[in-house]
Length: 108
Image 1 (cartoon, rainbow, N blue to C red):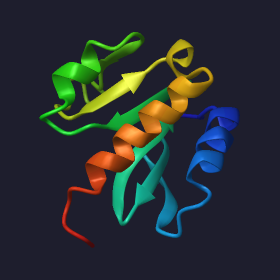
Image 2: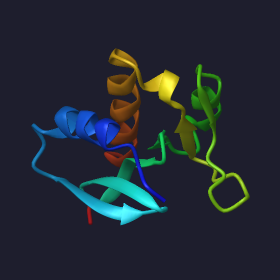
Image 3: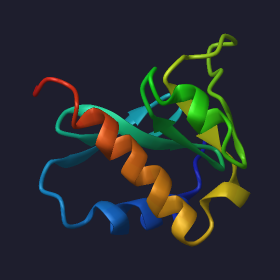
Image 4: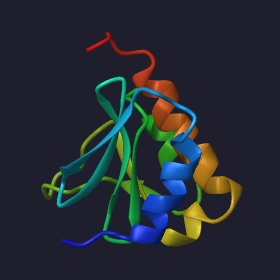
């Protein structure tokens, strides 16, 4: 599956100041790894964000967010955000959510 390269470039710009970021093909799209953990990524036109179980319900209440059901079953702790939800500063907010969550995980 192809992914939105324009969205990927915008995410790269937001993460550019970090030295612990890498990219990996994952979920049929592109994942942004921070400190060795997936923080966010892109599948098609959707942004995937790893928010963790504690912040999952809150994330789902946000406009344009929905369950990440890549395998046909919801993946608790991950959400998809559609294109309308990644405009302007909203993208920064979502990327920051993913980065904040992976900062709580053990170093790899």
